[in-house]
Length: 397
Image (cartoon, rainbow, N blue to C red; front, side):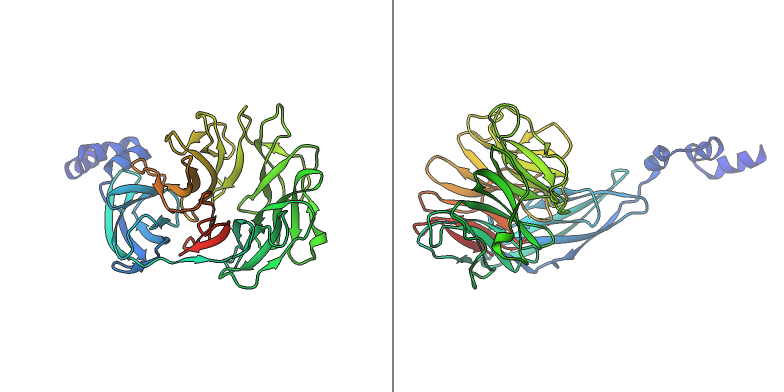
């Protein structure tokens, strides 16, 4: 009894009771009033940053657990990171060159305590470089995993599409395929050893794999059938290839996936009456984006967690047609093509609840801009545009 009295006279009653009767994590959570610590590792305050996008790395610590880190740009919540390493990639295409971007980073611990650190950056001048200049169309760029080369589909020298590759600065263009049929939509494997593409060289469109160490005839089909499989996209680990196919019940396209080795049956990922096309996997492989007209009269971009059946439109805007989703590396921001009936441009949607769709490019051609593809480091945006009269590949950085 005396020991109990000594404890209760020194410690608060709630804590003394916990020591005597046992405690749980919830009680410690309620008693945790110590905020976490946070610092912006890079870029440093006052630095100049890319006019396209830049990566932010944060150090956040807590005596218990950091639950998440929130990123606000000019007061607007644009992303939340729930896993270490704490980081995101922030778009600057919508910011004025030479202007200031104000960043607030808020670390939140398991008890709801917060710590905020701020920095301001100067937006560097951005450059727009035309990489190709062919009399017919060059479309759908795809970056190599090391960021040194760009593959694309081209009508260079013929009216059908073949696959081409060039250095990231547009130098040394070379044909990867030379087939009398259509070869389109190149997608580089994460290890850089092969390119997936769709082709009708066997009759209908199938997904083909082209090993880059071999000659063009070494391309082999990944999928087979008498229907169409198009628009391949690799899983981040390189074990699966996602694609759009009309092989299921009915006549609509849905998203499917198949092991990249070719073994095993294809698995249906979406199953809607409306066409689901242009699948794209987030950098962590947790989310899938695709185009569909589920809730609208025209195609819009939808996202879902891989393995889930619930989908949600990326935007609620009407009066547009949206296509070609592409994830900004290191973030949950999605770029896409939006056509207003007169022209198409690249737009993006950050994941924050306060964020709204933002226009990123302002093409002036009859077809406009499309086919967004980000370099692996998230600082250079490749796309196709007819702003000079025919479709060519461009890069903004």
